[in-house]
Length: 174
Image (tube, rainbow, N blue to C red; front, side, top):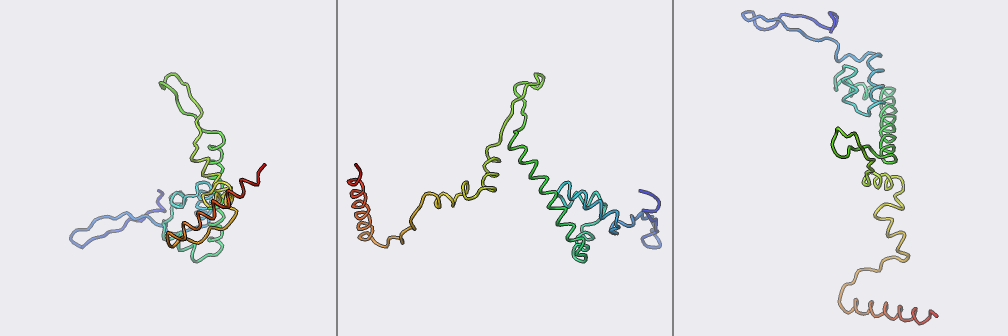
C-alpha cells in the first residue's frame, strides 16, 4: 500500500481522539482494474478471485456490470473463456486420467487412475440421446405406452391380448 492509497484522519469524540487509517480507491474501478478483473475471470471463471486480484469491491463490480453494457458483455465473454478452459481441463483428466501414488510415498511408484463418473458425466453432457436416462426409452420403445390400467378386468384382457399376439408371432417363425 502506497501513501497515495491511504488517508489518515482523526476520528472519535473530542475526548477520545484516535487515528484512523482508511484505504482509498478500493471501490474505484479504473480501466487497469477492469482489465485485471477480466483477465483473472477468463483464467479462473471465478468472480471472487477476479475481484480480489483487481482489488475492487463486489458492489463496484456488480454496479458496473449493471450500468455498462460493454463491461457486461466483456464479463460474459471472460466467464465463457474461463469455463471453456475448465472444460478442457476436465476433458484432459477424463482422457488421460490422473497419477496416484502406489504403496509408500518413498517408493515413487504411481498408477494412472480414470474417474468413470467423470467420464460418464461428460458422455451424458455431449451425447444425451445415447447416454441420458430418457433416451433409453426412445431407443428401446417403438410404440407409445398404452394408457394406464384402471381395473383388474382391463389388465387381464390386455395380458391375454399380448399372449395371443406373442403366440401368433411364435407360430409364424420357421
